[in-house]
Amino acid sequence: MQLPRILVFPAIALVAWQAVAQTRVFDPFLFPTAFAVLEKLFELVASGAILPDLASTLAKLGLSLAIGSVLGVMLGLLLARWEFAFESLSPAADFVRGIPGTALFPLFMLFFGVGDVTTVALAAWVCVFYLSLPVCRGLRATNPALIAVAKSLKKTDLEILLQVRALDALPRVFTGFRIAASLTLVVVMLADMFLGAQAGLGKALIDAAYTYDVAKLYAVIIVVGVIGYSLNRGIAVVEKKVVHWK
Image 1: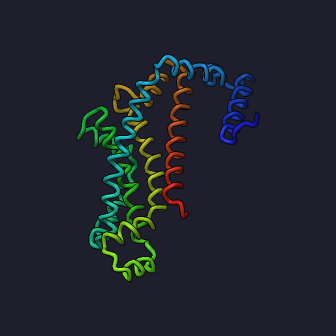
Image 2: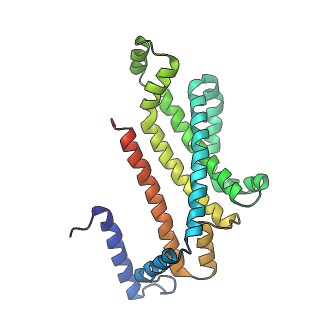
Image 3: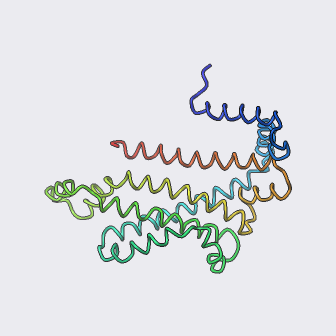
């Protein structure tokens, strides 16, 4: 039976990992075998020990993306539709986007305290500013010929926005959303590590490091990688179905 292409690299990576670990070039305590890590991963899943942390991270990620996406699209629409807003707020949005989310941890802690509220607020903030500008620039970059045709067909401004500008902007919007989603996951993970979360994969990573449970550390990293990959692939699948003319 032929191995599916999507599994070729993971299979090669696991074989290489196992081979390198067996040579003991690296300290076995710090670089356990692939089988040991997979065994720990299976144990975490089978026992349900990782499920509370997984559910917490996914809930915070989903809520952050939902809030950030709505606000990001609204801000992008505002910047695209009103020239004054674009000229006055676009530089500020670029400036804010240039500030690493981690640099804002202390400020958000002062406003929201330590916990999940801060995590969601900061992750949503990052999502807003990485999504709003692609939305804005996508709407503003609509082919003038398309708008002229729509106007010749007596389309209203709202119809032009929804049926012409929005559709033409979708490729840029999806690209921006993919970047925003990846960065949102990064912020959620870091916040779980350093903002005193009660549960979360970031907390699980820190706990594993503090207790020297190295196999668990690698296992959780694999879970985070699967989440990131699934998120990216999910967005790509939706984009392919929605932007079918691309």
